[in-house]
Length: 347
Image (cartoon, rainbow, N blue to C red; front, top):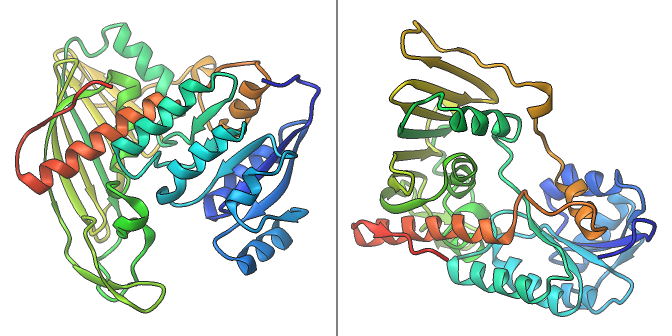
C-alpha cells in the first residue's frame, strides 16, 4: 500500500475501447495519479495511443513496462489471452493490477491469478466488474434479506443484443477462442451479477449453437469459429433456486438485458437499469424505489486507487469472485461439449 500523498504512476497495457472510454479517464480523475506509459500490440499502435491519449512514454513490450521501476500499477486492457501471463508477471515485479474482464481464458488461469495475488497481500488486484446491475445491487440485496420474495424459486436471465446474424462479418475477438478462451459472449458477466444477489451455482446443463462456423480474421485468414452465438443454460443454485440463462447474439430487433427473480411471495425484475417488483396480491409489477444511500454506480478506478492507498478494500471485483464466474463459464463449456450435467466444485 502507498501513502495517500504519494503519486501513483500507472502503465496501460492495451489501450482498447473500454480502457479509453472508462479506465483512463477514471484513473486521471483520481488525485495524485499519473498515467505514464502505454503499450499496445504493435509499436505503431502504441505510438498512436500515446499521441491520442496524451501519454508521455511508449513501452516496447508489456515485459519492458513491467521492468520499469517507475511504474507502481498496471491497467491490463487486453483481450483475455494476456490477462493471466501479464498479471503473474506484474505481481512478480511488485505492481498493483487492475485487469479488464473477463478474468482469464479458463478456470486454471483464473486460479493461478488468484493464488498469485494471495501470495502478494501487499499488492492490490482487481478485475473490472460486471456493470449492468451496479445501480440496484444494494436494494435487491436488502429486499432479499427482508423476505420480499419469500423463498426464492427461480432466476431467469435473458440477454439479447438486438442484432441480426451477419454471416459476412469478420471474426471478432469475442468469437476467437484463441483470444477469449472459454468465455461466451456476456454470459459470465451476467452470472457475476446474479452471484452478487443470491450466490453461486452448484451444477449446470448447457446447449449452445454457432451459426456461422467460419469467419475471416484480421489477417484475411479463414478461421473456424468455436464460440457460440447463442447459449442456453439451466443451473442449480446453491441457495436452492433453479436458474436459466439465455444469451443471444442473433436476436434480430430484440434487445434486452434482464434478471427476473420469482419467489413464493413476490417477483423482482431488473431490466435495462430499472427495478420493478410485486408481492402476492398485487396486480402488476411496479417501480421499486432505490433509496439515495443504496444507489450504486461505476467507481472501479476510484476503488482501485483507494485500495492501493489503504482507504478501502476491493469489492468490485476481487480475483476470488472472478474465479467463481470462470468456474461457471468453464462448466458451461464442458456441458456443451459433453452434453451432460456438470457440477461446480468449490474453489
